[in-house]
Image (cartoon, rainbow, N blue to C red; front, side):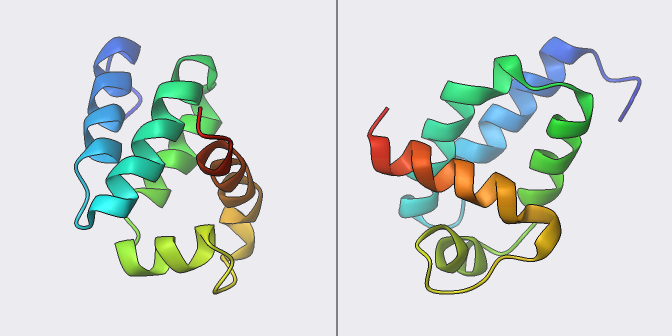
Length: 88
């Protein structure tokens, strides 16, 4: 989506983060998007966009440490977990 204006992309990703299949992931990913999206560069946004395509049950397992995230998402999942636990 390289031709998508940054402002549109940020709004789209924020909407996807806040409107998930399960309420827990709405809260976790919504909080993360509010805290980090504006500061992300293109590759980080690409990775977050890819993460949002993953299954909510898998994401919840990864964020809560009940399962291992794929290597490409590991650092992002760690940052999401830190934000979610910080209550910010």
